[in-house]
Length: 189
Image 1 (cartoon, rainbow, N blue to C red):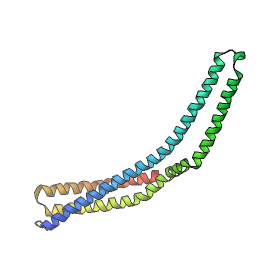
Image 2 (tube, helix red, strand yellow; image 1 turned 90 degrees about the vertical axis):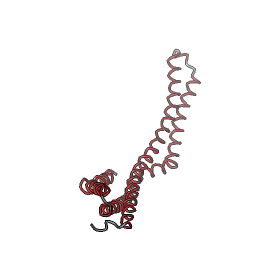
Image 3 (spheres, rainbow, N blue to C red; image 1 turned 135 degrees about the horizontal axis):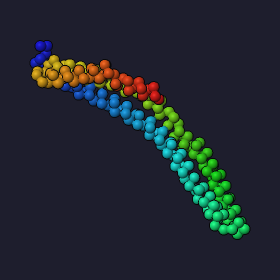
Image 4 (cartoon, rainbow, N blue to C red; image 1 turned 180 degrees about the horizontal axis):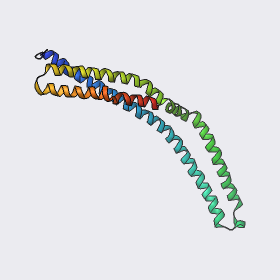
C-alpha cells in the first residue's frame, strides 16, 4: 500500500488532524460567541431602558399612592390643600424630570448603546464570512489528515480514520448542517 511505512507522512497526518480540528472548533466557537454578543448588546440596551422606566414608574406610583391615601382616608373637606398641592407639584416635577433625563440619556449614553445594539447583527454577519472560511479550511485540512492517516496507519487506526472521514464527509457535504446553520443565521439577521 502507498506510504504505509512512512513515519514522516504519518506525522504530517497527525499535524493536519490537529490543525484541522483546532480551526473547525475555533470557527464554530467564534460563531457562537458572535451570536451571543449580538444578544448581549441588544439585551444591555433593553435593560438600561427598562431599569430607567421602572425607577421612574416606582417614584410616580409612590406619589400617586400618597395622594390616593390622603383622598380616601379623610373627609373631602378635611384634606390639607397645601399638602395635596405639594404632592401634585411633586407629581408634575417627576414627569418633567423623567422626560428631561430620558432625553439626556437618549442623546448620550443610550444613543451609543442603541447604535451598538442596532448594528451588532450586521457586524456579526460581516465577520461570519471569515469564520466560515476558517471552518471550511479546517474541515478540508482535517479531511486530508484523516485520508493520510487511513493510508499510513495499519489496522484499527486506519478504520477509525476512515470512519471519522466518512462521518465528516456525510455531515458536511451530505447533510450540510454547518452550511445550513450559517445560511439560516445570515438570513435571520
